[in-house]
Image 1 (tube, rainbow, N blue to C red):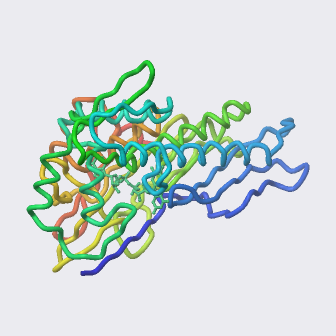
Image 2 (tube, protein in one colour):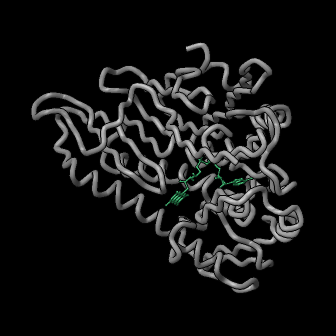
Length: 344
Ligand code: FAD
């Protein structure tokens, strides 16, 4: 079985600066910050007004503190995170959780209800069974009986939440929450909030391919952001968008997958079958107000597939761009709300 876990980043014109960098004194230049977080990388490009008395080291500290906090709360790769403590808890016990974790889980449950369970953060044990979680297993395809057993025991309707105090409870021991499809988007929004609190309103924030832009580049132009072509062994751009106030997330089956007997098994699991998606949708890009919403919707639509996904997008007026596999390459499909972005 060929296991190829390729994490490519959907970026154009941003470069890969690997440290805090800003233009030499006196020259107006963007503030560039980057580093690693949540098993991936982050990059910021911020237009700093010339009169600003900004302490860039201070900004860098606030950004990494914000990312570390989310990692400590929501990671399934840290045993002592809030989510891991919940995952280790037996069923029918309330666990008090923090406001950020409550906010993300609440949003996730809302997307589960909207998609009739296609998006479902309780899919974590199936994700791990297929080898895409913290404990990468290199075994072959999991046993069908195991898949079925787990599938019947998970589901967002087996989660209970209380708002005051903020608490959460699982009705089944098989519930294991995995926030990988929504928490990175939330982290992008949290970093954008740090910049806004420092009166910085022209920026591009990217974490593992999830992006949020505000205002314009140093040159006064909108931010040029690329949608990656869903090809596995090379980095190329399918389309460039010019964004101002927007968040963008892309999900696909070409970055994190393995192949077995010539069939590709992606890390996006359909909770209704317990198996990775099998349709021909190679990548879905969503533009939304917040990156948390864009992130969750990109996975939700990836599970729904090209037809039902586009129906869902039109019904909910979502700006969606799909790249679909054909016998000799790819074809593109975009929703009505996405069309203005193609005209730029
Ligand atoms: P997306 O395409 O956005 O979502 C796919 C992911 O969502 C899958 O990988 C699966 O986890 C989950 N999923 C699958 N099907 C569904 C479904 N139907 N509904 C809901 N969710 C589904 N990775 C590391 O290697 N090391 C780390 O230390 C690490 N720490 C992390 C900490 C945090 C807080 C988070 C949120 C993630 C962390 N990760 C880590 C995972 C990594 O950052 C990515 O989340 C992962 O690789 C998937 O990113 P993606 O954008 O490709 O996923």
